[in-house]
Image (cartoon, rainbow, N blue to C red; front, side, top):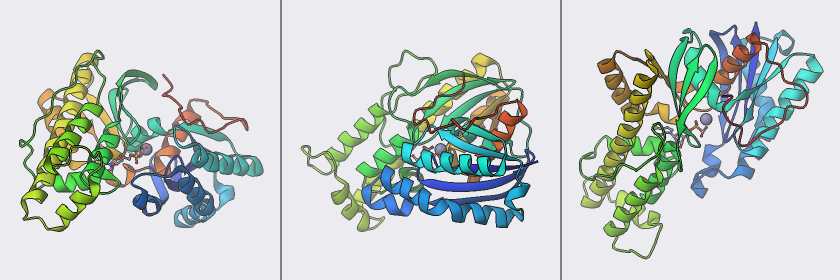
Length: 352
Ligand code: KG4
Ligand code: ZN
């Protein structure tokens, strides 16, 4: 069975062909990231325009790479939320037009669930596990039992990826923040700055806005300009002076301290959830799952508790249609079908 996956929920436009549940024949991603960099974040209008301009080409490339034709496709799976409304509309409209014209079944896929499914292209999904979803828009812990999903807790404010992005912006490091903070952190002193653990009522919830504010205050102190809130320009000049300057050391130390603190909170809550649900598997997904420091720390904590920690292959940590096809295949096997009324839902929640 061949599933065509289509993803356009944010700044990436992607099409993939998946044979059964385990053989990814192609997974083509066209990113509009370079068009957003100057703005310090994703501009929704630019993202949807990019999707509209690219989607035909991306589909053709996905079919060519997979060496299949459109009429060989058995199922069309498309992200219908959560995400940016304009971008979602492009993918959903495109998928509906294809399904209608080719008389093929259509399945709408939740982007968040698909991030975890990226782990199961090949390996079999465990019957029972705790999911840790860490992306630019979401941070949550879920419990999965034989296909049923329960939300254990989520962030009460910023998502962890968003915190990486905001801290990077404060430090003048550009967008997206995650990869550059990870790089800077490698040469920094993680013990240089300490941050207060946020008070929370939710046992499995997260909060990342306090640490972001703490970083802002440290940056303000560093640049001796307490009135201003965005010191990007000053700090870019500091970074440009080279890695040996004292100020550049500040950026590296703050990156390392922020990353190690945010990761320690994720690890603590995840391991607590795994123990609480008595599971032997923890499955991680979302853009932040590309972070090698998070991977090392979670794997170490998992080993100590006899828990297997799953991370998707690096290429599947970013937004991609391969994971959408995999989740769509799953839903199709369970009997789900979407009608021509399928539409983009920007704030789509997990199917709990
Ligand atoms: O899942 P994703 O591609 O988009 C959403 O669905 O939101 O996640 C994007 C997020 C961004 O916030 C980005 O900074 C973060 O993932 N990210 C990382 C790393 N690579 C991407 N965060 C930490 N370390 C990384 N290496
Ligand atoms: Zn995503």
